[in-house]
Amino acid sequence: MRSMINMEFKLHPHQEKALTKLKVGSILNGGVGSGKTLTSLSFFKKYFDNLDLYVITTAKNRDTGDWEEEASMVGVTIKEVDSWNNITKYLGIENAFFIFDEQRAIGYSTWGKAFIKIAKHNKWIMLTATPGDVWMDYLTVFIANGFYKNKTDFVNQHVEYDPWVKYPKVKKYHNEGILMRNRRQILVPMDYKKTTVRNRQLIYSSYDKEKYQTVMKKRWNVFEDQPIQNASELLQTIRRVVAVDPDRQFNAKVLMDAHDRLIIFYNYDYERDILINIANELDKDYYEWNGHAHEEIPDQEKWLYFVQYTAGAEGWNCISTNAMLFYSPNY
Image (cartoon, rainbow, N blue to C red; front, side, top):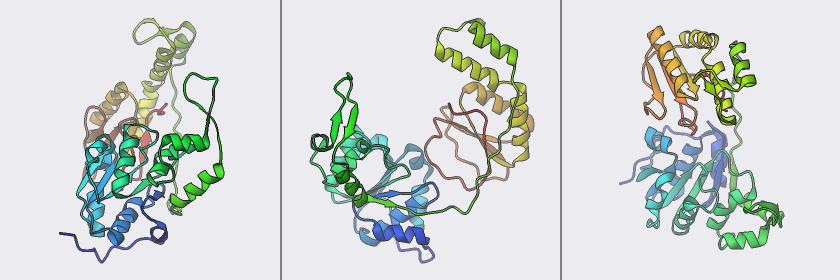
Protein backbone atom coordinates (compact mmCIF):
# COMPACT_ATOMS: atom_id res chain seq x y z
CA MET A 1 0.00 0.00 0.00
CA ARG A 2 1.44 3.34 -1.06
CA SER A 3 1.85 6.28 1.31
CA MET A 4 -0.22 9.42 0.85
CA ILE A 5 1.45 12.66 -0.23
CA ASN A 6 2.34 15.04 2.57
CA MET A 7 0.41 18.12 1.47
CA GLU A 8 2.65 20.45 3.51
CA PHE A 9 5.74 19.38 1.59
CA LYS A 10 6.96 21.75 -1.12
CA LEU A 11 10.11 21.83 -3.23
CA HIS A 12 12.27 24.93 -3.52
CA PRO A 13 12.44 26.67 -6.91
CA HIS A 14 15.85 25.20 -7.85
CA GLN A 15 14.54 21.73 -6.98
CA GLU A 16 11.38 22.26 -9.04
CA LYS A 17 13.52 23.35 -11.97
CA ALA A 18 15.67 20.22 -11.72
CA LEU A 19 12.56 18.05 -11.42
CA THR A 20 11.30 19.27 -14.79
CA LYS A 21 14.57 18.19 -16.44
CA LEU A 22 14.95 14.77 -14.83
CA LYS A 23 14.33 11.59 -16.80
CA VAL A 24 15.25 7.95 -16.42
CA GLY A 25 19.04 7.63 -16.66
CA SER A 26 19.76 11.17 -15.45
CA ILE A 27 22.53 12.20 -13.10
CA LEU A 28 21.21 14.76 -10.61
CA ASN A 29 24.24 16.92 -9.83
CA GLY A 30 24.05 19.08 -6.72
CA GLY A 31 26.23 20.04 -3.80
CA VAL A 32 25.70 19.35 -0.12
CA GLY A 33 22.43 20.91 1.05
CA SER A 34 20.96 21.32 -2.43
CA GLY A 35 18.21 18.78 -1.76
CA LYS A 36 19.09 15.99 -4.17
CA THR A 37 17.35 13.41 -1.98
CA LEU A 38 14.00 15.21 -1.84
CA THR A 39 14.13 16.03 -5.55
CA SER A 40 14.82 12.42 -6.54
CA LEU A 41 12.05 11.12 -4.27
CA SER A 42 9.66 13.67 -5.77
CA PHE A 43 10.59 12.48 -9.25
CA PHE A 44 9.80 8.90 -8.26
CA LYS A 45 6.54 9.96 -6.60
CA LYS A 46 5.41 11.92 -9.64
CA TYR A 47 6.15 9.34 -12.36
CA PHE A 48 6.91 5.89 -10.93
CA ASP A 49 5.05 5.49 -7.65
CA ASN A 50 3.54 2.25 -8.93
CA LEU A 51 7.00 0.60 -8.79
CA ASP A 52 9.00 -0.70 -5.83
CA LEU A 53 11.71 1.77 -4.81
CA TYR A 54 15.26 0.73 -3.93
CA VAL A 55 17.99 3.13 -2.80
CA ILE A 56 21.67 2.26 -3.14
CA THR A 57 23.73 4.68 -1.06
CA THR A 58 26.76 4.88 1.21
CA ALA A 59 26.92 2.66 4.28
CA LYS A 60 26.63 5.63 6.63
CA ASN A 61 23.61 7.10 4.84
CA ARG A 62 21.98 3.69 4.95
CA ASP A 63 22.52 3.39 8.68
CA THR A 64 21.42 6.91 9.66
CA GLY A 65 17.88 6.48 8.30
CA ASP A 66 17.95 9.84 6.52
CA TRP A 67 16.46 8.36 3.36
CA GLU A 68 13.44 6.90 5.16
CA GLU A 69 12.89 10.16 7.03
CA GLU A 70 12.88 12.28 3.87
CA ALA A 71 10.74 9.72 2.03
CA SER A 72 8.06 10.17 4.70
CA MET A 73 8.09 13.90 3.98
CA VAL A 74 7.36 13.26 0.31
CA GLY A 75 4.85 10.50 0.97
CA VAL A 76 6.95 7.69 -0.48
CA THR A 77 7.61 4.17 0.78
CA ILE A 78 11.09 2.77 0.15
CA LYS A 79 11.25 -0.98 -0.17
CA GLU A 80 14.91 -1.14 0.82
CA VAL A 81 17.89 1.13 1.45
CA ASP A 82 21.27 -0.56 1.11
CA SER A 83 24.92 0.27 0.54
CA TRP A 84 27.01 0.01 -2.59
CA ASN A 85 28.88 -2.84 -0.90
CA ASN A 86 25.77 -4.98 -1.32
CA ILE A 87 24.75 -3.91 -4.83
CA THR A 88 25.16 -7.42 -6.26
CA LYS A 89 22.25 -8.58 -4.06
CA TYR A 90 19.88 -6.73 -6.39
CA LEU A 91 20.97 -8.18 -9.72
CA GLY A 92 17.77 -10.24 -9.93
CA ILE A 93 15.40 -7.28 -9.40
CA GLU A 94 13.36 -6.24 -12.44
CA ASN A 95 10.66 -3.65 -13.16
CA ALA A 96 11.50 -1.52 -10.11
CA PHE A 97 12.93 1.95 -9.58
CA PHE A 98 16.47 2.51 -8.28
CA ILE A 99 18.01 5.68 -6.90
CA PHE A 100 21.81 5.40 -6.89
CA ASP A 101 23.08 7.87 -4.31
CA GLU A 102 26.65 9.09 -4.88
CA GLN A 103 28.71 8.00 -7.86
CA ARG A 104 30.31 4.70 -6.85
CA ALA A 105 29.98 3.01 -10.23
CA ILE A 106 33.13 4.56 -11.66
CA GLY A 107 35.19 2.12 -13.72
CA TYR A 108 34.40 -1.34 -14.99
CA SER A 109 34.58 -2.85 -11.51
CA THR A 110 32.18 -5.25 -9.78
CA TRP A 111 30.03 -2.32 -8.67
CA GLY A 112 30.09 -0.76 -12.12
CA LYS A 113 29.10 -3.97 -13.88
CA ALA A 114 26.35 -4.67 -11.34
CA PHE A 115 25.03 -1.13 -11.81
CA ILE A 116 24.84 -1.61 -15.59
CA LYS A 117 22.95 -4.90 -15.22
CA ILE A 118 20.46 -3.43 -12.75
CA ALA A 119 19.95 -0.35 -14.93
CA LYS A 120 19.15 -2.58 -17.92
CA HIS A 121 16.08 -4.10 -16.24
CA ASN A 122 14.83 -1.17 -14.12
CA LYS A 123 14.10 2.54 -14.10
CA TRP A 124 16.79 4.60 -12.37
CA ILE A 125 18.49 7.92 -11.69
CA MET A 126 21.80 8.76 -10.01
CA LEU A 127 22.62 11.48 -7.48
CA THR A 128 26.08 12.94 -7.00
CA ALA A 129 27.98 16.05 -6.03
CA THR A 130 30.95 15.00 -8.20
CA PRO A 131 29.76 13.43 -11.46
CA GLY A 132 33.19 12.87 -13.02
CA ASP A 133 36.64 14.36 -13.51
CA VAL A 134 37.55 12.50 -16.72
CA TRP A 135 35.50 10.83 -19.45
CA MET A 136 36.26 7.34 -18.16
CA ASP A 137 34.29 8.26 -15.04
CA TYR A 138 31.17 8.39 -17.20
CA LEU A 139 31.78 4.99 -18.79
CA THR A 140 29.23 2.93 -16.83
CA VAL A 141 26.56 5.64 -16.90
CA PHE A 142 26.94 6.05 -20.66
CA ILE A 143 26.66 2.28 -21.15
CA ALA A 144 23.63 2.12 -18.83
CA ASN A 145 21.96 4.80 -20.95
CA GLY A 146 22.55 2.79 -24.13
CA PHE A 147 25.05 5.18 -25.69
CA TYR A 148 27.55 2.30 -25.99
CA LYS A 149 27.21 -1.49 -26.08
CA ASN A 150 30.03 -2.12 -23.63
CA LYS A 151 33.44 -0.88 -22.50
CA THR A 152 35.11 -2.11 -25.70
CA ASP A 153 32.71 -0.05 -27.80
CA PHE A 154 33.41 3.07 -25.72
CA VAL A 155 37.17 2.58 -25.85
CA ASN A 156 37.19 1.94 -29.60
CA GLN A 157 35.33 5.19 -30.25
CA HIS A 158 36.99 7.51 -27.78
CA VAL A 159 40.08 6.24 -25.94
CA GLU A 160 43.70 6.19 -26.99
CA TYR A 161 45.97 4.46 -24.49
CA ASP A 162 49.62 5.37 -23.94
CA PRO A 163 51.63 2.47 -25.47
CA TRP A 164 54.77 3.32 -23.49
CA VAL A 165 53.52 2.41 -20.02
CA LYS A 166 52.97 -1.07 -18.59
CA TYR A 167 49.53 -0.35 -17.12
CA PRO A 168 46.53 1.07 -19.05
CA LYS A 169 46.85 4.85 -19.09
CA VAL A 170 44.70 7.11 -21.23
CA LYS A 171 46.83 9.25 -23.51
CA LYS A 172 43.95 11.25 -24.99
CA TYR A 173 40.26 11.09 -25.92
CA HIS A 174 38.79 11.22 -29.41
CA ASN A 175 35.43 12.57 -30.61
CA GLU A 176 34.96 14.58 -27.44
CA GLY A 177 32.10 16.47 -29.04
CA ILE A 178 30.04 13.27 -28.88
CA LEU A 179 31.05 12.73 -25.26
CA MET A 180 29.97 16.27 -24.33
CA ARG A 181 26.64 15.75 -26.11
CA ASN A 182 26.08 12.50 -24.20
CA ARG A 183 26.86 14.21 -20.91
CA ARG A 184 24.47 17.07 -21.64
CA GLN A 185 21.69 14.55 -22.25
CA ILE A 186 21.95 13.01 -18.80
CA LEU A 187 23.49 15.60 -16.45
CA VAL A 188 20.94 17.71 -14.55
CA PRO A 189 22.69 20.44 -12.52
CA MET A 190 20.99 21.95 -9.50
CA ASP A 191 21.54 25.71 -9.57
CA TYR A 192 21.59 26.40 -5.86
CA LYS A 193 23.31 29.25 -4.04
CA LYS A 194 23.60 28.93 -0.28
CA THR A 195 22.48 31.88 1.82
CA THR A 196 24.67 30.86 4.73
CA VAL A 197 28.26 32.05 4.97
CA ARG A 198 31.06 29.73 6.04
CA ASN A 199 33.22 31.35 8.69
CA ARG A 200 36.65 29.75 8.77
CA GLN A 201 39.04 30.52 11.59
CA LEU A 202 42.67 29.44 11.64
CA ILE A 203 43.87 28.79 15.17
CA TYR A 204 47.68 28.77 15.28
CA SER A 205 49.41 26.51 17.79
CA SER A 206 53.05 26.19 18.72
CA TYR A 207 55.04 22.96 18.73
CA ASP A 208 58.29 21.57 20.12
CA LYS A 209 60.80 22.84 17.55
CA GLU A 210 63.74 21.04 19.13
CA LYS A 211 61.97 17.71 19.04
CA TYR A 212 60.83 18.43 15.48
CA GLN A 213 64.39 19.08 14.35
CA THR A 214 65.60 15.90 16.05
CA VAL A 215 63.16 13.96 13.94
CA MET A 216 63.99 15.78 10.71
CA LYS A 217 67.79 16.04 10.97
CA LYS A 218 68.68 12.88 12.87
CA ARG A 219 65.84 10.77 11.47
CA TRP A 220 65.08 9.67 15.01
CA ASN A 221 61.68 8.51 16.26
CA VAL A 222 61.37 10.45 19.51
CA PHE A 223 58.35 8.41 20.58
CA GLU A 224 59.84 4.96 20.02
CA ASP A 225 63.44 6.05 20.77
CA GLN A 226 64.81 4.36 17.68
CA PRO A 227 65.94 5.24 14.14
CA ILE A 228 63.27 6.04 11.58
CA GLN A 229 63.04 3.32 8.95
CA ASN A 230 61.36 5.04 6.00
CA ALA A 231 59.71 8.21 4.67
CA SER A 232 56.27 7.13 5.86
CA GLU A 233 57.45 6.79 9.45
CA LEU A 234 59.19 10.18 9.18
CA LEU A 235 55.96 11.86 8.12
CA GLN A 236 53.93 10.12 10.83
CA THR A 237 56.43 11.11 13.50
CA ILE A 238 56.63 14.81 12.69
CA ARG A 239 52.83 14.91 12.46
CA ARG A 240 52.66 13.41 15.94
CA VAL A 241 55.15 15.91 17.34
CA VAL A 242 52.80 18.70 16.25
CA ALA A 243 49.52 16.95 17.16
CA VAL A 244 50.39 16.13 20.76
CA ASP A 245 51.84 19.51 21.66
CA PRO A 246 50.29 20.98 24.85
CA ASP A 247 49.56 24.29 23.12
CA ARG A 248 47.44 22.57 20.47
CA GLN A 249 45.64 20.63 23.20
CA PHE A 250 45.01 23.87 25.12
CA ASN A 251 43.52 25.58 22.06
CA ALA A 252 41.30 22.57 21.41
CA LYS A 253 40.15 22.60 25.03
CA VAL A 254 39.19 26.29 24.83
CA LEU A 255 37.07 25.68 21.72
CA MET A 256 35.52 22.47 23.09
CA ASP A 257 34.53 24.38 26.20
CA ALA A 258 33.19 27.40 24.30
CA HIS A 259 30.72 25.45 22.13
CA ASP A 260 27.78 23.55 23.57
CA ARG A 261 27.69 21.23 20.56
CA LEU A 262 30.85 20.66 18.53
CA ILE A 263 31.98 18.13 15.90
CA ILE A 264 35.73 17.42 16.05
CA PHE A 265 37.59 15.68 13.22
CA TYR A 266 40.87 13.85 13.83
CA ASN A 267 43.18 11.27 12.22
CA TYR A 268 44.84 8.92 14.67
CA ASP A 269 44.01 6.99 17.82
CA TYR A 270 46.49 9.00 19.87
CA GLU A 271 44.58 12.15 18.86
CA ARG A 272 41.35 10.44 19.87
CA ASP A 273 42.86 9.73 23.29
CA ILE A 274 43.77 13.42 23.65
CA LEU A 275 40.24 14.52 22.75
CA ILE A 276 38.65 12.04 25.15
CA ASN A 277 40.91 13.26 27.97
CA ILE A 278 39.88 16.86 27.26
CA ALA A 279 36.19 15.88 27.24
CA ASN A 280 36.62 14.17 30.61
CA GLU A 281 38.41 17.23 32.03
CA LEU A 282 35.54 19.44 30.86
CA ASP A 283 33.00 16.92 32.16
CA LYS A 284 31.27 16.90 28.76
CA ASP A 285 29.48 13.98 27.16
CA TYR A 286 31.16 12.76 24.00
CA TYR A 287 30.11 10.45 21.19
CA GLU A 288 32.09 8.89 18.36
CA TRP A 289 32.01 7.85 14.73
CA ASN A 290 35.13 5.83 13.93
CA GLY A 291 36.49 2.29 13.81
CA HIS A 292 35.73 1.89 17.51
CA ALA A 293 32.11 3.07 17.60
CA HIS A 294 29.26 4.17 15.35
CA GLU A 295 27.21 6.41 17.62
CA GLU A 296 24.59 8.80 16.32
CA ILE A 297 24.68 12.51 17.13
CA PRO A 298 22.73 12.80 20.40
CA ASP A 299 19.51 14.68 20.99
CA GLN A 300 20.65 16.76 23.96
CA GLU A 301 21.76 20.29 24.75
CA LYS A 302 25.51 19.74 25.12
CA TRP A 303 27.82 17.23 23.45
CA LEU A 304 31.13 16.64 21.71
CA TYR A 305 31.23 14.41 18.65
CA PHE A 306 34.56 12.87 17.60
CA VAL A 307 34.81 11.82 13.95
CA GLN A 308 37.76 10.02 12.40
CA TYR A 309 38.37 11.44 8.91
CA THR A 310 38.22 8.17 6.96
CA ALA A 311 35.19 6.83 8.83
CA GLY A 312 33.33 10.12 8.37
CA ALA A 313 34.39 10.80 4.79
CA GLU A 314 30.92 10.14 3.35
CA GLY A 315 28.38 12.94 3.13
CA TRP A 316 25.97 13.08 6.09
CA ASN A 317 23.53 15.53 7.58
CA CYS A 318 23.86 17.37 10.86
CA ILE A 319 21.64 20.39 11.53
CA SER A 320 21.94 20.45 15.32
CA THR A 321 25.24 22.37 15.33
CA ASN A 322 26.95 24.91 13.09
CA ALA A 323 30.47 24.42 14.42
CA MET A 324 33.28 22.00 13.53
CA LEU A 325 36.84 21.73 14.76
CA PHE A 326 39.57 20.09 12.69
CA TYR A 327 42.08 19.00 15.32
CA SER A 328 44.59 17.99 12.65
CA PRO A 329 44.82 18.20 8.85
CA ASN A 330 43.43 15.19 6.99
CA TYR A 331 46.69 14.64 5.10
